[in-house]
Length: 239
Length: 269
Image 1 (cartoon, chains in turn purple, green):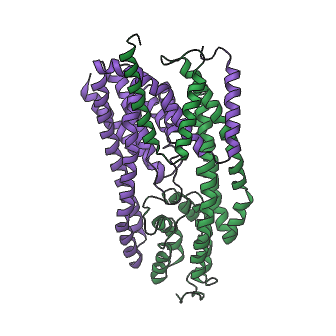
Image 2 (image 1 turned 120 degrees about the vertical axis):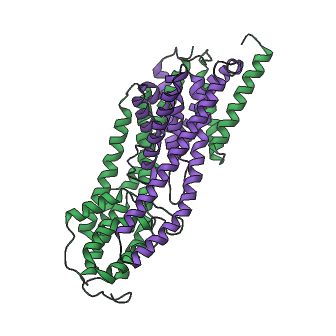
Image 3 (image 1 turned 45 degrees about the horizontal axis):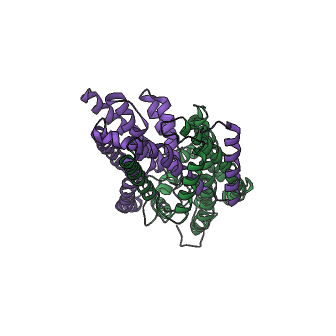
């Protein structure tokens, strides 16, 4: 394992995470920060596009309800997803094979980062009042150009905070993966982690996505299309 | 500048050109950079308005106009484009002495709520889940360009409405809200949930198919029932306000404990 290459890629992934996380709320909001875009893009850059796509799809489902309605600050799905992707890709590149238990552990280790990201964002929203006071002073002085500096400072500090969270998250997650990999514990856990990765995480993701659907009739449509798709896929399914 | 409710003395007759509107549009992409709990998106609004205000006012009038837009503002970031365009128009009227300044404040105050409701309902609650579930379904079906299609589908509406809002908002002023209403975005939002539901049903079936191909396949055709049962349990738990992480970790620990118990009782596993 080339530790210096791993660390440099970890730093690059963290910068990628910090940059994409800006799109979530602070800049552009073109949805490049959504897991379904950010994780496949990272997978593509790391040379594992297929895993990136599968992982991105699953993470998108899990974070489907993470929406900024009004003043609500939801969990930061971007930094959580990129940290999870970073753990998986770096593990696959430098440590071992990417299996279902590996990405399951990565998801379990990386999901809390979304909530940490929210806490940081809430703190920044409170602290931004200091910047607003500066803006008031700039307005009184008739200096609108000061607003640009304040906006850049606001962006910069969110970028740095998110980058640090992603870096620490990946480092901790890789540590957990290394501790579990190949040991006695890993053998015992393997079946359980397979079950979590194949059933519990997709089912939870789908349930989260269903909870976003507002029309009751739409849930009936979903049930019908599920049954129809299962029937269409063939009677051999699952046997 | 006169007191509130009265027409201001003419400061400028210079019209706002397309270049300044482009500048406002560009700045609108950073609308929420300094959101805060007291005045929400006021910084973003003032920052976006700054190029137009600098063009229209000088000295004390500029200071007052800046202060006007540093007041509380909270709306949907995409729909704010329309309010920005219309506000630029109103500021132009105000600078020319044809409109009292408090009418601009009133326009913003009354319109930010309804615009936010349209934006939340259309973009956050409908278009994003619709485009995302379609893309997830696409990926699971082997359409590996689905994330790019997701970005394109979403941003046709997002960038289209943002640009339309700024430019047509400037042209129509206060009537921009009627124009936006004509698109029937809320009606579309309501109907799109049926399509999202259909995509999610197919996605669930694709996850069943995937489960049968893994080491965790149960066999005997049980996967559809197992996945459906789990989805229902999670769905009703979420509806009862149980947090997603709690469900994730509780069921994960439960799954590992179950496997460990089975391993202890039936070592064949």
